[in-house]
Length: 314
Image (cartoon, rainbow, N blue to C red; front, side):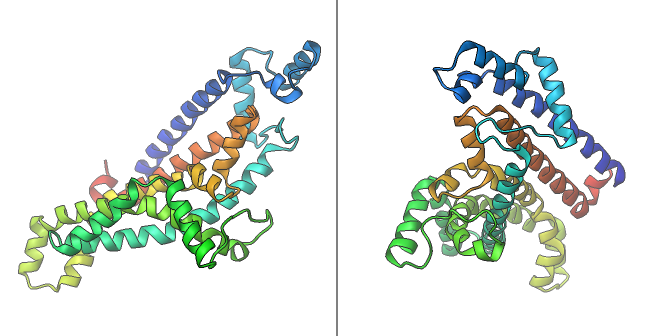
């Protein structure tokens, strides 16, 4: 097991390094000039050249990259040229907000998706199975801004049960922010629910047809024991991957949802940085999102190994 985890950790480190190279290269080819974005179009060439020197943009790309990555690893994420503040506190504050939204959305769609997927598999080819499949797929093709506007119209404008915007105070606790998280979380859950439902249903149907499940049924075991002892342990393996990838998306991929609800998450921060060509903020935010993705996949790999001993010793 330890060897398996160490090998996965090695892949994780390699992935982060390759991603950091791509992110740094991508920021260097963004259209526009950083000095012009910061100082304005009417700044003198001397002022622009001075700012480029202060930011280290006059050095070779390889030197810039190695300097940035070394500082990033030590916790020095630089200073935002658009807000004139240290990058790391801003990023972690937005990360905290994204975690709060992710927790609520995760708690909504993962248990519900697994439950509906199991029910659809156990009642496959019935009206209940068809209803769950069609109902979940109806939302997967619906853009987030459309479902967000519909939810705002119903629950905020008409019923007045929930706030229409989620511009929470930076110092808000989870309890204080919770009413503002409900509508964004439902919007995210509607988009993600179908993936979990379909994956759980498909894998459960396959497992139910396995010989060892048939043997367990022939031995006279109760359906509940067969389900929880023999079926779930194997049928949830593919679902774990979908859920793990979804964790990374919940943290850094909710740009549309955060924009619709004016929610100060890390995805919206990345959009803000790109619009202002704030290189330090773009690089720090993007690489942190990558790290979250690879850590989520590492956790998924470990859970795979725990649930399936055949994977553990490969």
